[in-house]
Length: 215
Image (cartoon, rainbow, N blue to C red; front, side, top):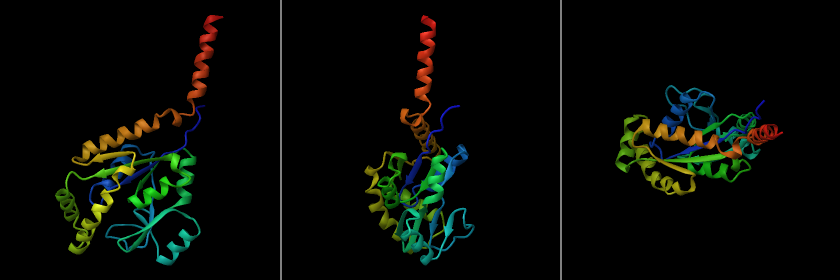
């Protein structure tokens, strides 16, 4: 039986509106073996969101207690609300060989890359083709007020400045193309020698076959 590889932590980050959530959803529909790291947040649910599906919706006291106890793999305050990734389900998934997608900002990505799970991380930053297109996408969602959109646009410059900290950068000009590029990254990362624990035994078996042929 082939040895089970350890799971990969796939970090997707971008300025708000660049497409990371949409691309994360597409990647999961392409490979239903992928797990999604459901974040906890102190913000209120948006229309159609359900607790435990999009987010774990918590009050601030509960969230801060979990973070203080080390139960969050990463956490940060964004636009006045706390966001974080519960540690236990992530560690359970990767130990069972399941790849986990994180839809988080640069602060969360940085914390995970600096954690004890750094060797499991593949980080991908998604850039918009232009700032005008970024704003257009935010407005087309019709989820936020003009003030919130303006705040997101002001913050996007700082978010984009962290692009060079990531393993890969994709420019989301077209969702179909960006999805294919994401698939290619995941396939290549899964095929890395260090992530194929059965290779050593396979090569031993191949050498044994060579020896049998020469005897």
